[in-house]
Length: 362
Image 1 (cartoon, rainbow, N blue to C red):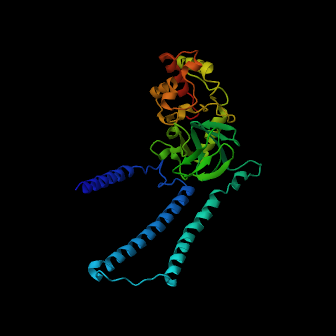
Image 2: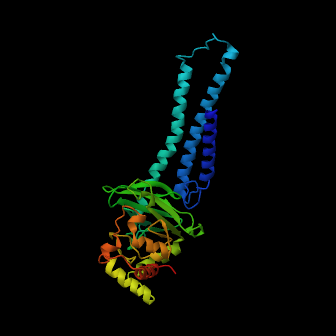
Image 3: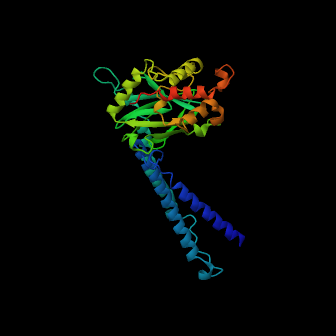
C-alpha cells in the first residue's frame, strides 16, 4: 500500500514540475523560441535528434510488448521455448545497418552546421573604403561580469550587449580569470570563454528586442565559475541597423564628460571621482581593460549588477554591501574606498542620482 502511495506522490511531483516548467518558454530566454537563424538551426538539430531517439524507443517498446504478449506463459505453456535466432545473419544485418543509417541522418547535418557556425571569415570582409562591414564584439568574461568591446567602432560597454538585427554579429571570446561560458539562450548555443585561447563564433537576431517584455534578451554564464556563477547575467538589446548606428555615434560622443544636472548628482560625481573612478570608466569611447564594469550606459540598463532591479533602493544596497549580494565578486566594500567609513545615506543618494544620469539613450 505504501509503495502505491509513494508512486502517486512521485507522479504528482512530476505533474507539478511539468506545469511549472511550462512557463519557462519566455521568448527572451528560451531556446525553444529562437530569435535568429543560428537558434533555429540548432533547434532543428535538437528536434531531429529527439525524433530519432523517440523513434528508437517506440520500436524497442513495440518489440518488447509483442514479445511479452506473444510468449506469455498463459498462452504458450510452461515448457515451450521460442525459436532461437542466435547467429541470424538477417537480424545481425538489420541491427547493424539501421543504427548506422540513423547515425548518418543525425551526423551529416550536425557536422555541416557545426562547420557553418564556426565560419567567421565574414569578420574580415571590408567595403570599398577598407572599413569592415560586419560588427565584431570582443567579449571578456570576468568574475562576475561581462565586458563588450567593439574594436572597429572604438567603443566599449559592460553588462549590456547591443547588436544590430538581420546580420551576422561576430564574437571573439576570452576570459580574464577563470573559464566562463557565453550564452544567449534565445539566440544560440553557448561557447566557452577561456583564459589561454580565443574562441570565435557568430549569432544573428531577426527583430529588435524592444517588443519583448523587458526590451532585452537574457544572457548568462553557462560554466560553473564560482560562488556567484548563477548571478553572472547580462542583457542583450537588438536594434534595427539605423538605430544601432545612432547608438554607436552616441557612444563615441560620450567620450566627452557627460553633463551632470542638479546639485545632488554633482555631489555624487564628486564622490565617484574620489572613490570609484579608479575601477570604473564612464565613457563609452575607448578600449576594454577596466578593472570594473564600464558605467557609461548605467542609466539605460534594466538591472543592477546583472540581476538586481534597476531601482534606487537596489543601487544603494549594491554599493553598500556588494559581497552580500554577489559573493566572491571583486568590487570592494565601501570602507575600502571611503577612508574606512561606510557611505552615509546622503552619499548613497548622491551616488545613485549620478549613476542613474549616465545615459546615451534619449
